[in-house]
Length: 119
Image (cartoon, rainbow, N blue to C red; front, side):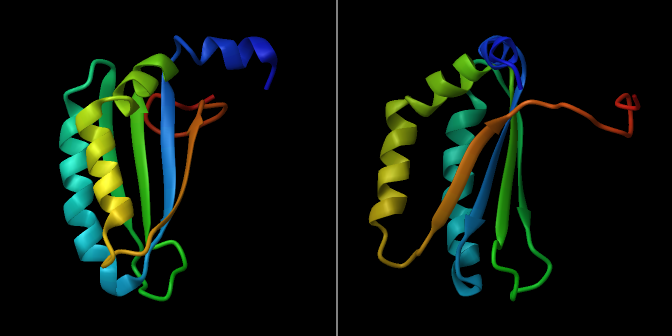
């Protein structure tokens, strides 16, 4: 990706992907807390949608994957700075009943196939 492309992500649509490692027996509790955080994010300017995907097998290392779409990197950054969202994140980090390893990043679409994506 060129530097120009990365700068364009500040105003171009972005996809937030978070691959989440959480023990299978803690998934339901995590999902409940995710819904609270997603509700906050869904009211932020620039938010498009978010989906939390669960592995079909409890043996899968990464039990959950969150995929969210935003109007821009700037919109996502502003939402991440929301004090209510930050407080919910701290509560999750401090919860002794949930062990989470998150791997978040922002992405841009570089190729695709399917409805309105065929190249």
